[in-house]
Amino acid sequence: GAVSLGLMSLVALMSGVAKADNPIVQTIYTADPAPLVYDGRVYLYTGHDEDGSTTFNMRDWHIFSSTDMVNWQHHGSPLSLSTFSWASANAWAGQVIPRNGKFYWYVPIRTRGGSTAIGVAVGDSPTGPFRDAIGRPLADNNEIDPTVFIDDDNQAYLYWGNPKLTYVRLNQDMISFSGGLTSIPLTTAGFGARSGNAERPTTYEEGPWVYKRNGLYYMIFAANCCSEHIGYSTGTSATGPWTYRGVLMPTEGRSFTNHPAIIDYKNSSYFFYHNGALPGGSGYTRSVAVERFVYNADGTIPQMKMTTAGAPQVGTLDPYVR
Ligand code: FUB
Image 1: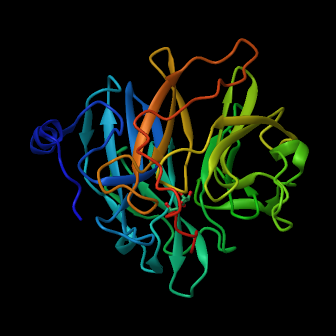
Image 2 (image 1 turned 120 degrees about the horizontal axis):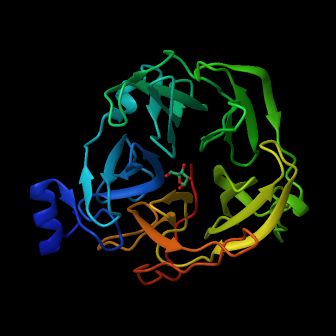
């Protein structure tokens, strides 16, 4: 069924401004938040679950922006599967980063050949328009969920993966890389121990988000599918070694996935995630939400709970079928 709109959201939709409370977007189902602070504004890139979906049904990505973290403007959908001639399905979790006066949007996509590959789109502004930067996958190893990070020495890294975790060193052009694909060792010291899954001995599942703060590297990620919680690790360099730091947000609510992102904006820190809190919400009709938080003095992150998580649908969580 369609998302039922409260009066607030209806007004918001008509005015093009999405309102306030969690979930951030109440006019469509959104997932996989990727915020970017640019030129004094927060741009929020999301996936889009189609109304009434009973499996992952995602064909395009959307952009929202805000200058107060309360009122969100919807910039529409300037990127979709049709942007990539080689795409067949799965407009899944991506991230945007500016460089060279351009904006690079990395996304996982199902190819016409059937594998899952990482594509890169490029635009001249944070809201596009965007075009396929290279006309083919940037990397094609049947893995998902890219996160991109530029270190202080200007070296850019792209990390992605489920069940593996891989990175490459991107070249200055941001649309090619040097040195090949490198596997990050998934050790329990680095990513925590998972029990009862011999193929996945650590909690790492998917959705990595890498950033650096006060000299410390952070990798936050979706853990222990299904249902997922959010965990995180810290490292002494962009390539590790990583040390597991624990659970950032426990499992809760109607969605069996969650997906993390963190930014600092106007002297506050914000944690973005998704759940199934809207009317009609589920693991396939999700919505993006945000919490403000304060880092502990030692740089660790306090554990957070969802606000407006939606009541759990006990016993009705769908298996995670790709
Ligand atoms: O939204 C589709 C997939 O579900 C994403 O790629 C994963 O991170 C999970 O959120």
